[in-house]
Image (tube, rainbow over all chains, first blue to last red; front, side, top):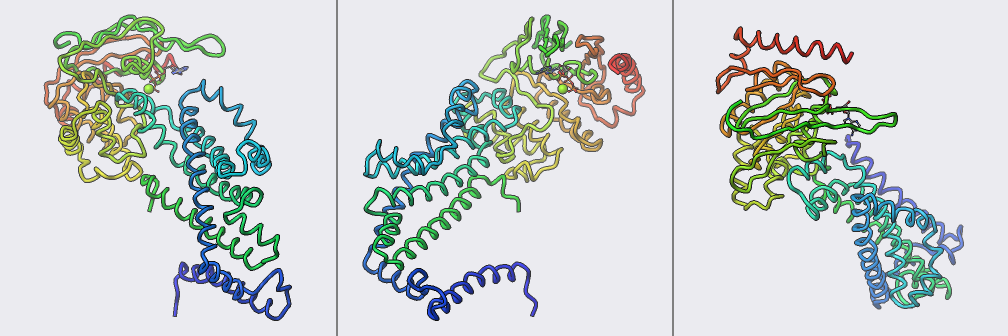
Length: 255
Length: 257
Ligand SMILES: Nc1ncnc2c1ncn2[C@@H]1O[C@H](COP(=O)(O)OP(=O)(O)OP(=O)(O)O)[C@@H](O)[C@H]1O
Ligand SMILES: [Mg+2]
């Protein structure tokens, strides 16, 4: 039987992780690898089931998701608005760009102590970390996205009577949207990294806390459950944002 | 010139600052375009045609002088421009592009649908109303740009080499279409081209511009309307006009080269 190339590729890309798990299972049971650090997938799956049953996984996941969602909005919306303003008005760009360029290279994880100092150990500091991670890529990409729009489109807007908000809505925003979406995806990924870090240091809940706590009390299985859950969140987030991009930018959907 | 003056250019001068001194794009131009007149400007590349039109559209300011457009009754926009090169929004469908001017002026939904539908029919774009520009040929994109300008029913229509990027067949087709639409509306048009053929085919009056941004000659085109592009081009009068204008232009092009 002949199979198509696409089918073959799909089979291969499913086969490789499955093979890895099988190998891992065998290696762990045969004690080729230290099963204290690399417990067999079947035993992790057992812990997974138990944590779903007693509700700890769900409650910690929801906590993390809530912080992530709020943080992405809190960082993304101002980033978008400021980026549009910077892209459209040169004086605003001249004013704000040096500040952003100067602070952008600071590793976001390195400012966690400062954030904890300012916002305390409560929810605000977690949200702030995500927001910072989201803000920079969004503001930078939005400003760049608007600035790369061909001047002629702004002339068309003026000529046909677009003023103020209509220029944002009909030209600057849709014209920059492909570049903005790249920033949003970057920012969301960064936000997920930062929420995990923030929860490890100063939290009593969330997946980051779960992982950190599991390490401290040497519940390796729980740690793996947390890691896998975060990986799944990252994957689902990527898929969702790609889908959002497809919906928002129909003029780019060339098929 | 037919009727009262619709557009008046008074001593319009435009200088651009360059690193070493300045460049005079327009050297103080004065002329009038009559109401309902199809006015064509021909001139060599770089003689200031786009600059002149952008000033008329209010997109750029002249260094000195002024352009005034007489207002008719009603709330119509003063002008609408068909830009040189690609200017339809890539992120909007054909219909959204064509209705842009009306939407920006807050026209009623039913009115927009009716007017835009009419011009999409006129330009043969009805089937592509929901297509995006990347799905269109160059000729179709220029049709969208023309529909967009006509749909908002401006006092004057400013067209900057709308067909220059098209192949011969497409250009002739679009010229015919433009003539047909124009016959319905009898708008005041300022049309820029560097094709002498196009100028004689479309215009009521032609201004030949010199390479240094000044009017060099005015030529009246006596053909009656409605015109048929192909029949027109077969007449001896057409050949004579073509020859006269070309002779005027040739000296200019030699000066530039
Ligand atoms: N923003 C600008 N800054 C400096 N010089 C300019 C600017 N815009 C136009 N010019 C110059 O002014 C002159 C006239 O330009 P314009 O675009 O009006 O020419 P044109 O007649 O439309 O030419 P074409 O037929 O090639 O479109 C050119 O020499 C051009 O280099
Ligand atoms: Mg030009």
